[in-house]
Length: 123
Length: 123
Image 1 (spheres, each protein chain N blue to C red):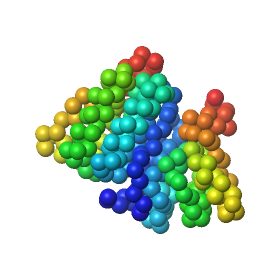
Image 2: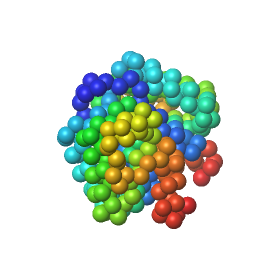
Image 3: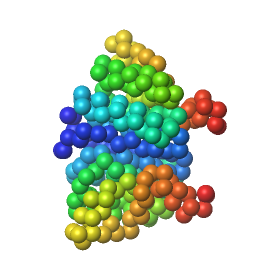
């Protein structure tokens, strides 16, 4: 399988949607941060949805990356929601003492959208 | 990088969204077909959006898989739109004589949604 170096960002109205399907390694995480911040600025996005429903493992690097993205987006005035976390992942995160600092979560992308819309007062 | 065997399907209202980020090999393509048809049935989805914006190559296998999905979805009464095709991919498809039979296309996911909504008369 070809290794890709960028995760596609999908614009949906005022929001950006990212579906993470592979383990994030260094370059991939760096590019994702770069691309997301650029897109927030270019597209004037007000929210970022990161779907991790296909991930069965979230390690400290991934946790930190998600936290970082949320903090960076916040500075750019955009909210971040992580959606679709598998139950086992949530259990592991807490047991490992890895709180996803500053990261909002929602059960799935639809609920994530609702959360963002409500937060931004556009629902 | 861990090889995954399922591509996540994201439900968005009446539609299902799939972001293809890796080359489709046999099992992955089979599972995608299975999962999509099951989800169309379960969630009563009326349309399927397949975003291929991160693919730089589409081979005959991928082309056939996309066509098959569109045909199967049609039987289940759902429309399929392939979005985000890179210019180079479109050029290659035509030069190789690989028409994406029965597949609708749109420049990006947003336009794909608009197309589906218009087609279904819900815009």
